[in-house]
Image (cartoon, rainbow, N blue to C red; front, side):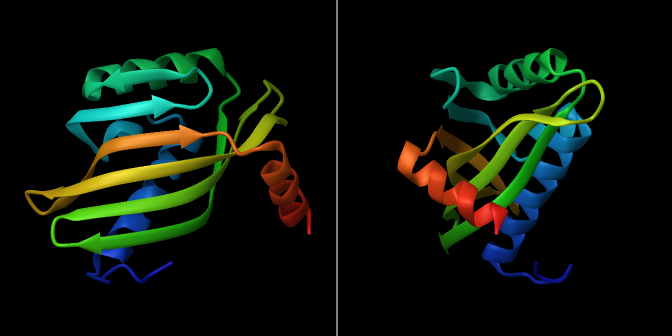
Length: 148
């Protein structure tokens, strides 16, 4: 991960992704939504739902956290970032799961995420997020790679 003072857009966006993942693991709702623009549009892979606006995004995560009292797991994997001017795109793989009440990870799977960002008032903010489930073949390859 880039150093704390690396000013490149790519470094800033990687830091944003890692801060978001840390907030998910900690169950920190405000940290989870901190990277989103007020007009964010989000497509969820698991529920096949479109959310519009920060409040919709917040409601979804509040419900997700409440439904998993043992907490969530999230590991940022392979990430590609392209940025020009005030627009950026990130493509990522995430290992996402839940923890049981005794702390054991359950139902973990890989997800793909495409994140569209705009720089507003000096900060990168997500304006659109898409989560997708990989194909069975791709998931098997990801599972094998993570076990190695």
